[in-house]
Image 1 (cartoon, rainbow, N blue to C red):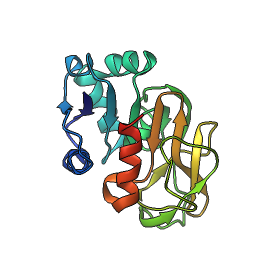
Image 2: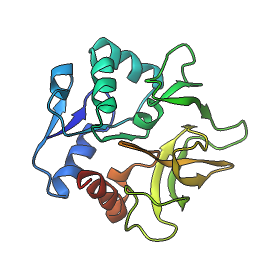
Image 3: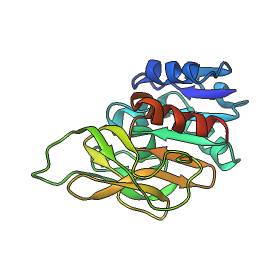
Length: 198
């Protein structure tokens, strides 16, 4: 069973519609820790504010269980804000801690950049990636964000918008994408299918 985490905001319907579109029947939207107990994979969608997602995950008692399941090796996919949540903190809400699975700070695009970065952009794949398998060279996907993860050891693909940033992240059983696969047409479906078939 795939658990899609509901923290009271985000793009749940788009993600669940995408799962249906690729033929996944065994998924559940979860908003409490017990919903993660038997999850074989976990998806954390994200639209909104870093402070909100982390406060809601905490208020719902989900943080500890998310960390436990991820550390137990359950494949995890964070989409947009769900990717940001994997890191220690974000400039969007510097007083709020992230999950802290990876070191680093999520950063706002510099002054002068037109934000949000919204629309289609090209990925530069930096290394072999299970999540991006079959996308071809320079895949074109859909973004909508004002904050980004800098290039880090786990960066599997970068994108450039004034400066390079992490577009796809992959480390062991943890995956994250800054783009929105659920809004990226056939290539987005392929990304979701790759995760489901891990």
